[in-house]
Image (cartoon, rainbow, N blue to C red; front, side, top):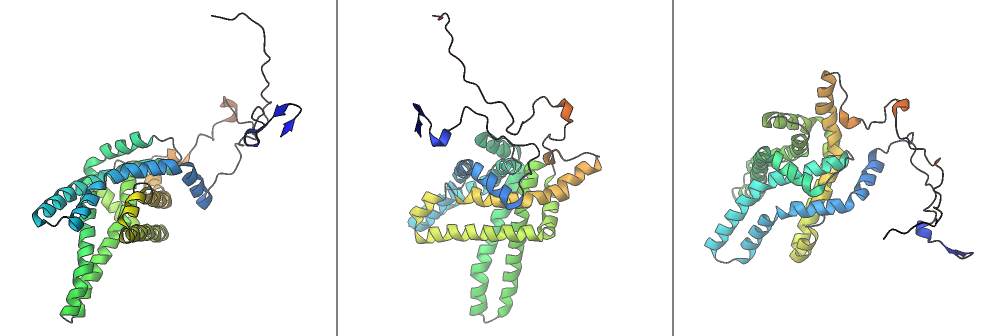
Length: 314
């Protein structure tokens, strides 16, 4: 409003006075409130992270295009083999890099997306390659079982072929649940590959609630991506670099990382008589030893500096 020759913009009004501040006694956000608080504050970083991860999915996209559009069988097979192997080797480390960044988001730690992504990629490369290869094999096995066994059951009129189908899909489901934890533990601990698999397998059955919620969202995003590809490949290729991977994995990590803290990380520190540093934010310091304190809006307003005449340095 214009008042007595002064003009204040509504969006920034009162910028010279102290704000309400954040009381150190204010309750911390938890649950769904914390989820959306982190999600919206990191939204653009999630998009950037998705773009980084999608780079390592490009070989798979090229392989799919070769299958659909290249008529020369030998050329098509060569491209699919080369791109498939490239994707298989690098998708695991890319998952480790994305998981490292998102874990820091969940813990509300300061993060440099590109630096931390490639740090997670590099530090966990060997372990992540093994996990990535096993994931690709499991996915191909489940896809093959889904397309082969029902046809055999119908062709040979023998419903026993559904037994290996159920076994294959069950194994694929367990591996999916293990993935919710293996990359998080890989980036948060220095556990051996054997112990990563062991703990992930245990948590796949121990944390039923978190696994069901994560799987529901995982299936939703998988179907969303599949539908886009079926309806219009150009639209899918426009959306996929920006959206589905990082957002869906953020939901999984936010949902499942507390389980790892409860069953893996916290017991380790408890056995040493220590507190998991991830659970502390430094607010338990002795009040007298604090150098700076948030006054919660009790600060004195910032006074305008009066113009004073003085010599001008040239």
